[in-house]
Image (cartoon, rainbow, N blue to C red; front, side, top):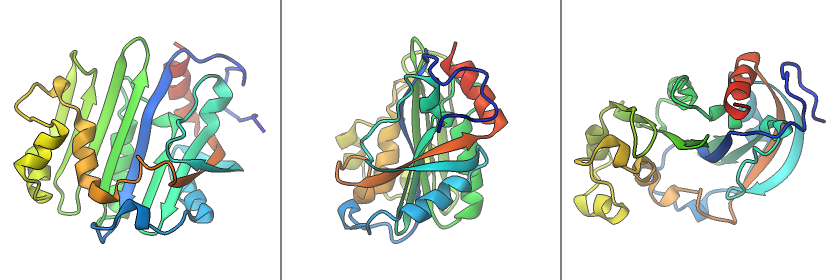
Length: 238
């Protein structure tokens, strides 16, 4: 099933822009659980989570389990209708090609804001990279006490914008200096030279599920909203 309502591009049209890393996590307490001790994937809860996003109108098909290390494909247009979602107890996650951005829309931040309202006691952590000749990144960390930062731009280049307060995030997480040193985070560097996703990894701590091949997600083919499709057509078929 590849037919959706809003695309003007054919399902087999080759994409130019491409998705890199992509995950948006909702991490509910307790915050000290080892990722490998999280409950097994619950496909129905993952589907419900996908259906709750504004950029998804309908889940059309359950495509079955995937390792969380299975990257989203963006080779042809029909790939862009596939999202991955997870539900392991208090950890929810989603990866969606509609999160891609070139600095004009900041969809990851918009979704994080909505998730913050729905899950006020959760740590919300997201990372998206998009390639279109150069790499664009968007990272967000939002903690239950309100400490947050959002970093968005072209690493090694300008413009690169950071909002919120990453120092407040570090303080809220009680991160010692050696923990930052171990992952190479130095906030005295220029914002476009900092690997912000590493601070997101520290926010997830030992519960970070995204590096484990054995952690399972579920792939779904969806009908994206009209606004999400319009944005993806601009980004992936430049």
